[in-house]
Image (cartoon, rainbow over all chains, first blue to last red; front, side, top):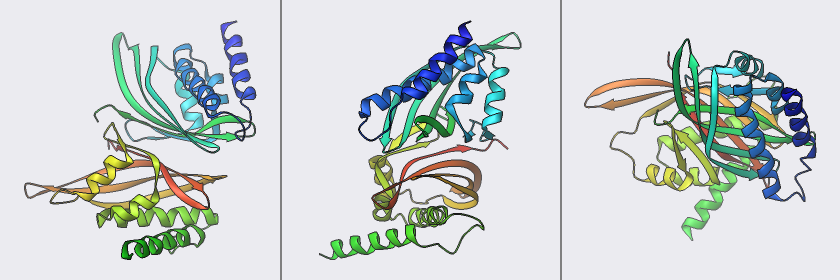
Length: 146
Length: 151
């Protein structure tokens, strides 16, 4: 039930994001930040459908080990996520017409093979306003102070 | 006056680079992708010459640069280029893919960085993601980030 509500919420965020021209920058920023939060929560709720909607089909990610990942690989990662908490901080959106750059730091806490872990990473994501909604087209994650 | 003329020349070079295809091209790439590929090469050259004037023209004012887990602004970056270390690390680009979506280009690739410290040479490979956005007909770098390859 919670998953259905979450997916419905995502659908609203995606379709209500109006066209960039005439759309207040702050409005676009709010929508992108909301999707960034949903992205993180997808790892906690193990909800690959949420990511399916947020990520463009041609999405590419570079993880903190420098490994290149496709959308399918990132979505699959959500299914096996051991995260119990995902917090974001210092998020900033830079709008460039129909593109946007988001930088920030996330802290992910979880339990892996019985051992608790906490990881802080800095990220940069590129978003594009495509077919009436914002989608992420690229991302990179690096350990803070790496 | 000389500075103004130099700036105009550099701008012309950049505009040409965005509209013409360069020598290092990949088969099947769009003209936009080819132009961005040329700019990536020019950026490496400018960096190796510590030419922050060219970099200033390539970088959007809101550029975000992530290096070794730290967030660096355009101003910080250019300041560092202006006052380089005695031995600037050598950057050698490797593979690179350029994908354009409307006015945005995503460049993903790897490069090797060779540094000399206390007479000893060490090299590290990095994977990077650069984002370029075409503004008023000119491709501008708006985000750049790199991660050291663990293997």
